[in-house]
Image 1 (tube, rainbow, N blue to C red):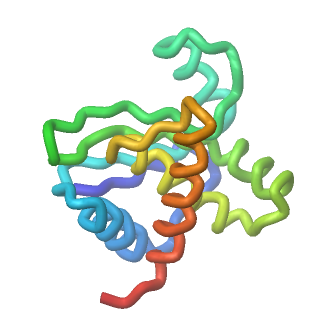
Image 2 (cartoon, rainbow, N blue to C red):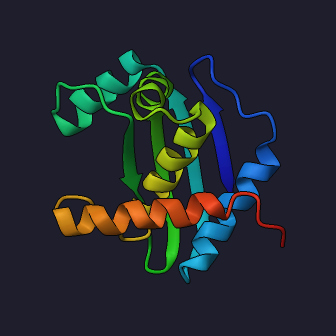
Length: 139
């Protein structure tokens, strides 16, 4: 099951369109969908989570908690809509494009992709672009 929870002003208008997209990303990587939750927070709420669970005292755009079991993908993906808004301005891209990048980024972490090294980051960015392009692909 793919679920969406909104703890900020942000709302996804067509949840089924986003659910379908997330499911297709998982399938495209050869995994099976488990329980995926996207939780949209403010900067302040995500900072509290970052401090409590990761012991980091910084703002971030995303925190992903992995509950995967083998090839069954499950996890909680927390996103700061404030950070996404700021990132969109910084990178000069539309907000919704940046939101899709961050949403796919969290999911890619659950699918085994990292971003700790330069090499991993290059692969992660390419995968984000690939998965964003899948958003409007008709099945």
